[in-house]
Length: 248
Image (tube, rainbow, N blue to C red; front, side):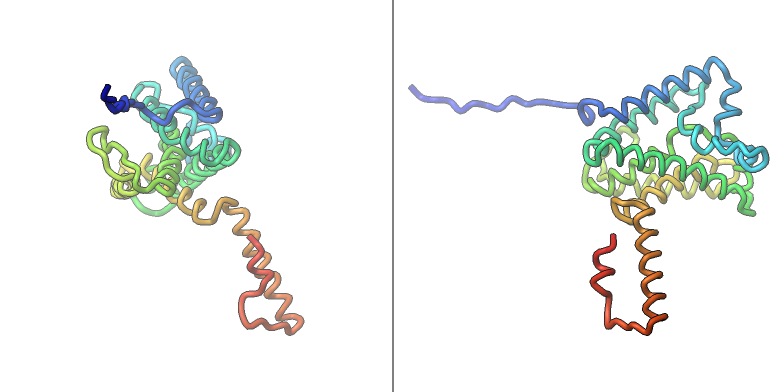
């Protein structure tokens, strides 16, 4: 009796799979704050990022709290941000582990907020417009996640505008270019500056190694200190020493 080969069944999946612990907490935190700001609109003034308030009133919590707020009048704002957090955050948390993922998310998000405050002080019409405007949303940290995703999975296809797939590395380049051009326009560069900062901080953080900026700064300090001691005691080396090669 002839045997027929078994035909493998096709399976389809959407998204990165089961949600991870940190992403779950972040999703619920953003949803809870969205509901809170929908009920109490004044929370946006207190917790949104307004550079004039950070500098003039010393509301130094705003570069942190703005990440958990979204425009209560525009539900698509939080929907797309949370969709991106789920799609890219879950895979990165599995890759890094929860501790490093949370650290990276916080550094890119808070760093983007601080960078927005600094940019608002620059003497250009497009940057001065940011000074008194409120910025809300998780986009700074989300753009940091996009940079990390493109770093580890450069050829993974992402749907551009939810229409056609392009490799992740080109997807991030296009978003960065759009954010840069938008940031140059007066009145249109508020969120764009935060997006650019998230991309830049994510890139620098990943380039400095898994240990991040702290390990890099520690290495540079120790190297400078050893070179200073060598000059003080007339110790010369023909090249990079074994000590240098083991400091990371």
